[in-house]
Amino acid sequence: MNQQDNNTASSYSRYFKEVGVLFCLATLFILPLNYIYAQQETPASNTVLKGIYEHINSYLKLREQSVKNLSKPSGKSEPEKIHAYETALEDNLRTARVNASRGEIFTPEVANHIRKVIRQEFKGQRLQELRKEVSESETKGMPLRVNYPYPEQKEMLEMPPTLLLKLPALPQQLRYRFVGSNLLLMDREARIILDYMPEALP
Amino acid sequence: MRRILAGLIVISLLSLNCDRNHVYSQTKAATQEALQIVLPNKKESVHFAVFGDMGTGELPQKQLADLMWQTRQVFPFDAVLMTGDNLYGSESPRDYERKFSQPYQQLLAAGVKFYASLGNHDNSNQRFFKDFNMKGKEYYTFKKGNVRFFALNSNYMDQPQLSWLEEELKKSGSEWKICFFHHPPYSSGKQHGSDKELRKVVEPLFLKYGVSVVFTGHEHFYERIKPQQGISYFVTGAGGKLRPGDVRPSNFTEKAFDQDQHFMLIEVIEDQLHFQVIARTGKTIDSGIITRQEIKGP
Figure 1: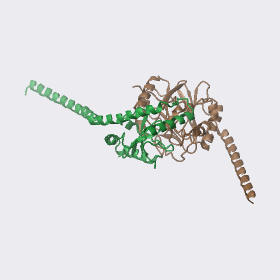
Figure 2: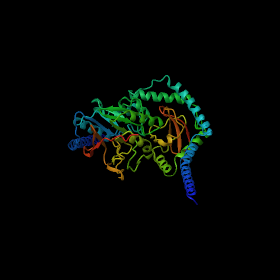
Figure 3: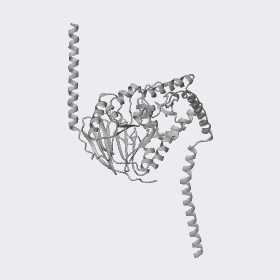
């Protein structure tokens, strides 16, 4: 083998090494990206989300009607005014939604989607910790009824921020809450339960 | 016979009440004796107090409020940060009176401003209450001297709040940045412990934008955490509630106290923050100095 052949062999070997490194890098970066994209919305989940937002938008329209004749407190209100507003809003909304029932917003499709999101977000130790926190909270024995207020004496458990970033985003008037393994959808100001889904926590 | 019995009952009740008043005034005198301010107490510095989990409407809350009032005669603070659980249980106008306005009436009358954050026992509508100074918002910011405060709602740390926090921290320049909210990212409490989920989303922002001090509540005791990546975290959640024996000191505990209600006094002088923690007996249970955190930068 002459000098030229040696040079050609070493340049081939360098070429294969570089290709190898590039391949490894591509594997390292592209595979996780594929995984991330797989976690994001698919056409099927988009349809589900469209469904939940249609229900939420109808609720917001109803809420707008219920709130329009009320005197909303400002940041400088007395407790009497705050209490009057909360009570009147609760009454108006409950009257307007007198026939509301469970599963109207958290339809079976939406509930399945949310369960999937929670299962993906909370696994192993984190899931155990969340379960423990939920089970030890002061919400034990709380009756869950759609269109009824959340009991004043019961605490409202903090929602895990990392989960809030994954669940369908809500307008500021609405909130998610855990009670036991149930996930509630609530009106922030009227404090009424708009809907709830059982077995949200695996 | 009935009249005699009734008379005896009234006499014993009266003597019991006298006894209680006597004990209370004795305790008050002992408290005043124990109370010593160890802060520099300079006229031109920023003075404020911090406490949390206070809204019970019960005697210990009232006693601590009286002590805060006495303290203010020597250390004139004009603001109080509240780390949440401002009103336990029902929240009727009478509850606002009994659990807040009445216990702190002297401080309120003297013009002291209370700045509330929301705990897991608080109704979001508290944000409208004039004496909580929340401007109708669940999270807000305000400035005193060279200190920028950020009140957060740790019950519901969603994307809009996180974006708001980042934007406000970014805008606030190089002054002191102090955050206060309910759930502690670090805690050695048996009941709750560290809120790691919350820590995951807020701590990167605190580090990026140079937050130096964080006050939280939720746990009904006092704990000073060893600085975490330069940030000083405090748990101060015994302004009314108390959970004796709940601290299980961990490797990040610098100082802990769970035997009595307490509040904190803070004084900021240029690049130094002085703190003193006072128990219901008037005794100082912790004190120290924190130097301002430099911005790590994005």
